[in-house]
Length: 369
View 1 (cartoon, rainbow, N blue to C red):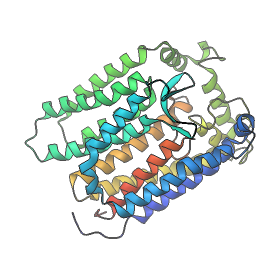
View 2 (view 1 turned 45 degrees about the vertical axis):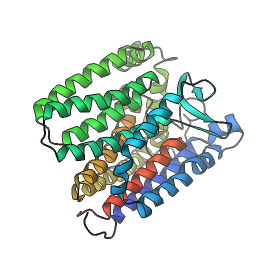
View 3 (view 1 turned 180 degrees about the vertical axis):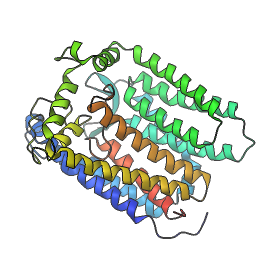
């Protein structure tokens, strides 16, 4: 490892900008829902701070300041096994929690609940980065590498399939596939793998009637039932269209008042667009793109393959989720239920995401860029 130097402060500033912006956007988006469900306009804000921001800041500090990223390599398998075990525990009665018809959460008494799949996708990236690092030091066999990649991916996606979590499966598959490309395998293997993933994804999609209906809604909005599968996207498009150039004003959204489902979750981008308009959306896009560009720059300058693959994988994970969310809620892709990084409500994801950014900031202390 090269000598430690100053971190990439540009990346860190962008990271904190996204975290703070996310709190403001969440606060505005959750006003009506907080009052309706809990009698408090600040319920979601303080819950996000308590269960997302505070543990996230602790995680960021630990992985940025106290733990060199190379040290994490020793624990990638342990992290993966624990994440898989927790992800399977959701199916145990009295421990697993079913919300909105999906069993994806673990309940810790009455204190809080969390979604282990959020931990799993980051654990998969950590383990795959370590595996690619080991593979790069051996005599490469692209066929064996492709088989190993599919085997690893099948483990993670298989668990997500049991949880009926298509969105997280897509995000994870996309990030690991980009890491696989980065490893330098020949393009013919990339093409073969892409076709295999396409077949797997299609089988996953058609295995559930609700997902099929969502796809049909996406393909033909006019023929969909506006009171069922087509309702959310129609309301989201109304919100986005209402924003215009400058938006209706911060806190002035109409769609968040019981019109748009998941206004604090995967639909939050529509509220952002309605209140801040094209200018506000462009601003958030600019920050995200600079954040992604800065992370890729850190990955390119990392002193070893583990640092390169790990940083790139984490950035791919965040960027894949960002573009999937925005594309789906804007009507360019079918709805997948993927939250918007740094902005959507969800303490588990935000805390783990902030910790992962601490790892990237740590790598930047050794990166040449």
